[in-house]
Length: 194
Ligand code: AP5
Ligand code: MG
Image (cartoon, rainbow, N blue to C red; front, side, top):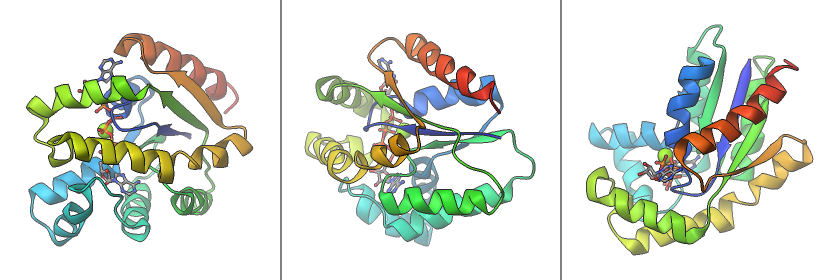
């Protein structure tokens, strides 16, 4: 299986790139953010809980997100692989992912760190706020908070993958296609070895 962790700050292009990657490599897209937003839309108990964190730009508790992703992974039989978009976002989540993948004799193949400077992230997210309907895009202070949370809570997870020699840095400042090509180069190098 090809299991990709798509890492990077809010607005880096994780969702955008996931769409093309699932097509090209036949992978299953797992984004806690999208699953939680769908629960918020349907007003489920999980959605009510999640919005109390998401709307302020905070992370949803580890145990909630881990359970969601773990149960999604177990739902699929003989998949070609998964793209984890925005997961893991803490060391606890990173360790849990290794554990539940090992339970199906799998592991993370590659971690792609999409790198985009803060000014570009702000511009992208402010532009998107016009059409996105995302509460967490609706105010510059929430966008800034998400970026701060990324830097303090999520960025340290990078070292977890660097130590395993699985982290590949990707310049995410080019066009969507340019970034996609850089990502595919890295995936194609590791998938030869699978
Ligand atoms: P999540 O949904 O993961 O949002 P995020 O990480 O804040 O990132 P975004 O989805 O905003 O950005 P993206 O990197 O996907 O970029 P996109 O492709 O959309 O998480 C939301 C919330 O859910 C979290 O704050 C947290 O509360 C909770 N949550 C989620 N996962 C969690 C976890 N693991 N643990 C705990 N809580 C969790 O692109 C952004 C914009 O830029 C778009 O308009 C796009 O068109 C544009 N764009 C993309 N690429 C380019 C490019 N190359 N050039 C120009 N524009 C571009
Ligand atoms: Mg996204």
